[in-house]
Amino acid sequence: MMEHKPRICIAITTFYPYVGGAETQTLAQCQRLIESGYQAQVVTFRHKHTWPLTDTLKGVPVKRIAGSLLGKRDKLPRMVQRLLYFLAMFVMAATIWRERKNFDVLQVCQFSLLVLPLAVVCYFAKKPMTIIVISAGAEKPTKTNEAAKLLAGPLDPTLPWLQVDGKTWIDGDLYGLKSAGKGVVSLTLNLLKHIHAVVIVLSRRSERYLKDNGFGELDTQLIPNGVDITRFHPAADTIITEQRANTVVCVSKARWEKGLDVLLQAWRIVQEQKPDARLVIVGSGPVQPQLEQLAAALNIKESVEFAGLQSDVPGQLHRGLIGILPSRWEGMPNALLEAMGSGLACIATRVSGSEDVIEHGVNGLLVKSEDYEAMAQALLTLLQDPQLAKQYGAAASALIQRSYTLEHVLSLYTSIYQRLTTNNQQLSEDVTPSKALITPIRIHFNENWICKWDVESNGTTC
Image (cartoon, rainbow, N blue to C red; front, side):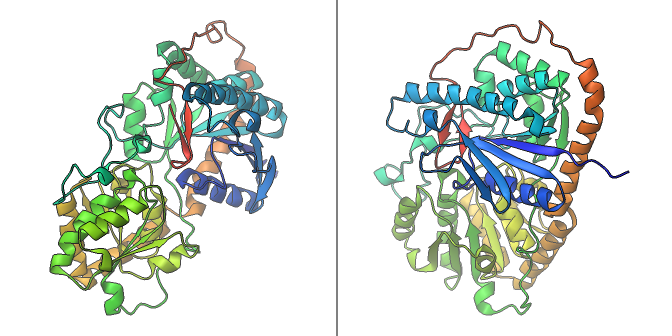
């Protein structure tokens, strides 16, 4: 008998044309699902009126909703913006309800407050649900009166251009849900238990984050992001030229949480000992003008190339032998996985995801977040020993090909989909509406938790 392949509906708050890690992984996984004979569709918010209501991206059908609520809210008062987003969540729930006969499994990208109304839909529609925890945040309080700043290093820390817009600070997935109150948390947890939802975490740190915040009782599966190794693989030319050995490549958005200011401070130290080294930063973002100003103030401008957005990222990675990701925090960084898959010896900070894939001294080097002196030493270690860099790069590439390919990751997802749909018949017979689960919960609209969407972060914070 031919195995039935479940139809997958993916709910995600931001999607193309905005591009981030979650969006990239979602599109890549949907493509692979469809190529493997599955049906997959994406339902997302329409944040701009210029975006089409329906779309097909690389063969993946996309439906955009709630444009009348979200499309022109940029100039409205902040509280009104948040109210509109709150209403948009219920539009999403209503849309998923109407689509209930067209999918077998609902997958929600990000464990935000949106999970609650969607869990209600799955409960009454008797549909299984998976939730991906995108980020555990910075693991420290983020609602602070102290503004974020670029690291000053030897510069005057009071320089006004070092200050960064506080909107760049992003909390972990569960912040909005917990801020809505214990009743909301309890209701969500009970609903997810009753529908036997599966929570997918991208890293061991995210798994701990889930447990620490009271959701450890749920069925939790650790599945990392995957790499398209047909694109990201070691360079065909195995000869290490002097130029490649002296070039470090960083693929990253120019956002404060990515720590590029930390990298520039480290690069100042590197330049003092290795003046022929070159740093290539691929990507763009809101703090790029400040980063360029920082490079000039540190007198390293001539050795740093701000390459901006590039379509041929593999080609950019192959310009160097060493890759680096200096993030203040991550979920499971695609950029690091792709650099490792491309055979680069990588240096990363000890943050979620990076600490899972890099084994210090075996396939790369790890340093403490914001420790630019340790980062400089790690860079010098590899710049001064190209053979060691080549060794780490080979080990990194082997790890990616063994455990982090899109095909391997997709097999883990599809096994969950198959298990959930196989068990769903029994679930449908067992689950009946419970008064305890549908007791009304009073939710407060205030400055502490109402969800907002940040164009630059490509995500939802609450």
